[in-house]
Image 1 (cartoon, rainbow, N blue to C red):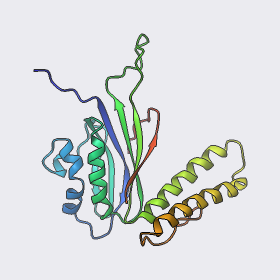
Image 2: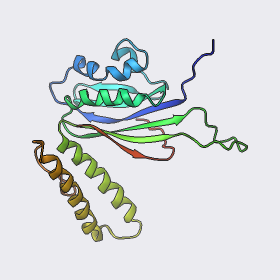
Image 3: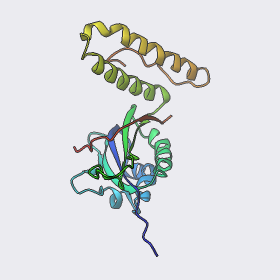
Image 4: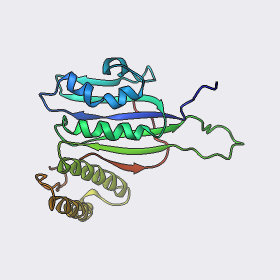
Length: 210
């Protein structure tokens, strides 16, 4: 009988601010889809990463912070575990946060010059937060950071106010569309001011270490 070899190394990375009243037990329940996917029986058992140099899953009770730098071997079905975890983690989050998830193709050898295969690496941003407005805010802030960082190679930062204003308009429109059916608080707007989902990226991402 052949042994199944998971086709991906899946790296999860990010920090999630938690409510001050969140307990370890609540966090263990919320993260159950992740540690159960790794074949563990508890969060304490599954908190260690597949790589010893990575800190894994950490709960900083004093800082009220969930810290993720954790790798598991698996398949694309890990996205289902993320969806389930995100719904539970939303209830514990104090504010919006982004979690990076990278699927490294275990079978791809970039040093094989004779190979014609392409890497199946995939990268996505997974967003959690106490409400849709908080998630929109962190999405908006990340987009502004990326766009301004790219454009500052060609323009002075002081010239980019109009670009940021247009990004804010787009997010305000998205907020207004959500607000038609949901009571979600304040609209995300303004550089530097103040339901989970995916945002997709591409390319092989470097592995993060705290």
